[in-house]
Length: 167
View 1 (tube, rainbow, N blue to C red):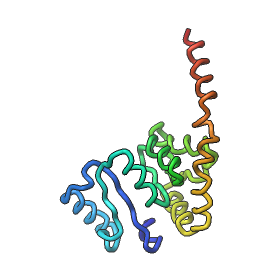
View 2: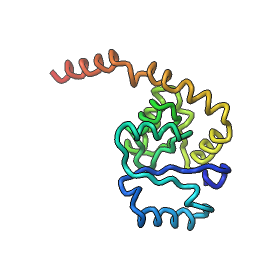
View 3: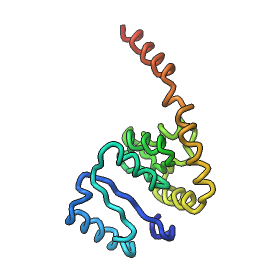
View 4: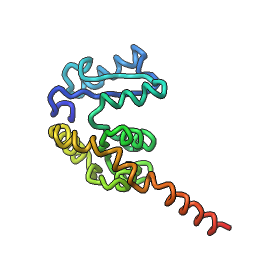
């Protein structure tokens, strides 16, 4: 729905088998069956990359679409570190609430959607506002660095307190 709503948008999927021709055909066909025109032009399928190439790939990404029902954790933090905002769909289990938790800690919980329809709406709205996207991306690393996620003193204090309680 996002790809069909946002003109000229493309989706990058990166996974182990991303370079396998049969797997690539499977995904092209799957997206075509679900209404995406020209999937070979609209989908970018990538296999695993070495560390530096992996991070460089984020320079070609405007918005990260979090997975569901298992939200990203490391990939969400990597996207944010690279200045890429993340849209997440919130579920009821821990594995589908991690995106909300991470976004809340950087005060960007407004990118967390409660329904699939809201997820699409938020992604389309952000993709349709390049000025806002540019502003968000310009400040993302600073926002992440100032957040509790990167407050090593706070994290160390919390761990020390947990050890004290256990002891």
